[in-house]
Length: 68
Ligand SMILES: [Zn+2]
Image (cartoon, rainbow, N blue to C red):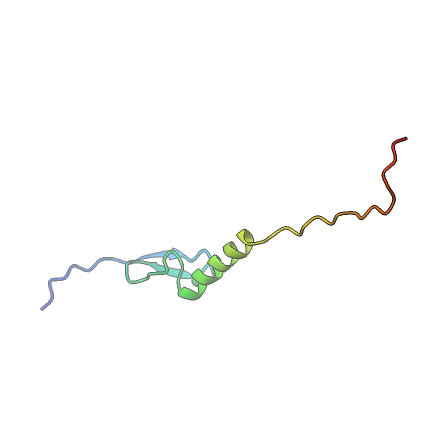
């Protein structure tokens, strides 16, 4: 006999694949449906934040600047 209360599991929409995701403690990836979806989302986020702008190219001016 088990007196453990049954916690109803809430189903939410996975932000990554738009599929059903179980929003419950047994789903450590919530609100994502799976580890894969969570990693995809984090990967997208990380690649955005780690994007380094290309350094500006200095125009190598061969001649000396002259004021006119
Ligand atoms: Zn998903």
